[in-house]
Image 1 (cartoon, rainbow, N blue to C red):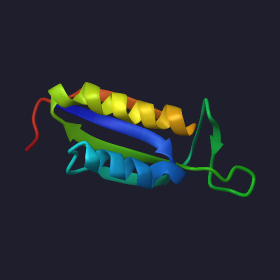
Image 2 (image 1 turned 30 degrees about the horizontal axis):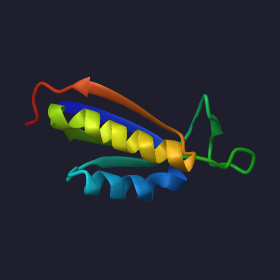
Image 3 (image 1 turned 90 degrees about the vertical axis):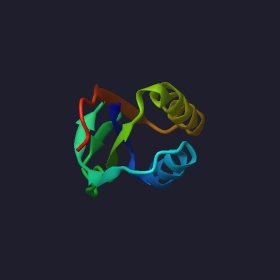
Image 4 (image 1 turned 30 degrees about the vertical axis):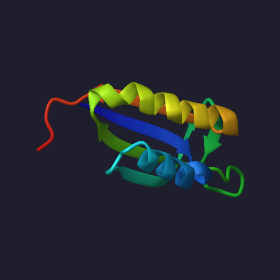
Length: 94
């Protein structure tokens, strides 16, 4: 199994939720309105820097990860959204 952390523009979070459901992801956790600085700029939810990110965590069967990542990248590339994905191996889910 793999743990995916997906960081996406907050304004795209609902689309990401739909894509996860359509791809058989039945559970995830979200941290909405995350603040930070990265290659896409400053995201502080303020008047000067109004954008924020949403961070999703989900555990996916290893054989489904590549297809899910391909689908998510395709969506973001076509819509001009910014997304980052980080994956870790999962030894146990208890």
